[in-house]
Image 1 (cartoon, rainbow, N blue to C red):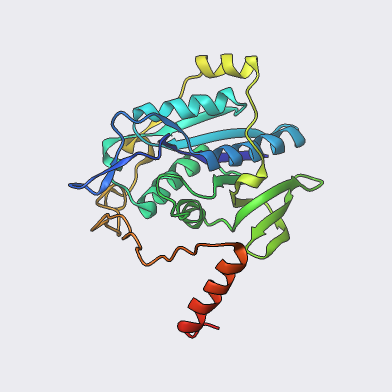
Image 2 (image 1 turned 60 degrees about the horizontal axis):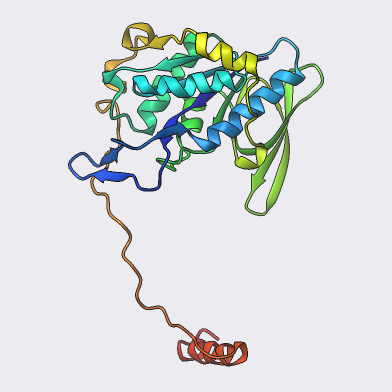
Length: 263
């Protein structure tokens, strides 16, 4: 089974500020890590690799040159190899342009049986890139997978999908794409052998020369969405604090609800 996992380097902080001039995250001085949900997707890939002999796991990341660090980390955790997609031309891409660009990279790797994504990135929280890449690749996609098992023969998967009301169980043929939630499992610690392999690994860097994208579909130029305003939600000040014993608080709450004709 040929498995590709898309991973992203994100800020490791909840104190990231917004550049008001560009409406982008100001990442200067903020440590970066692998997107936590992508760790879950990578663990699913590694479990399938262990279960299906001959399988490989390739990670693909798009970002600035320093994003090579998360590719090496993925190899240190057990991935077979990895690729970094990087270039100034890709800068400012929205989810659509990002999906288009990463789809080109996955196509360049050759046909994949399974493409995996974390359910979303913690620095954007859109949950759009995974399904978008699947669209560009022409692959069926299931979102919010919390358990994945290879069926006998290695040509199909059993997928347990998280829903608001519980879960669904699916059997899906390969090739396909999945987005993965944290319940799928915590990423393993790499072996000494894999850590040594990560240090020595040659990480290919693919830019416009390698991917040959349509220049009108990448980066800021190829992004149909624009951030026009970034702001904090207004603080709500109409809260009421109820004092007294639990019984007194309950009585006051019922009275307030009655005043507003809610009970």
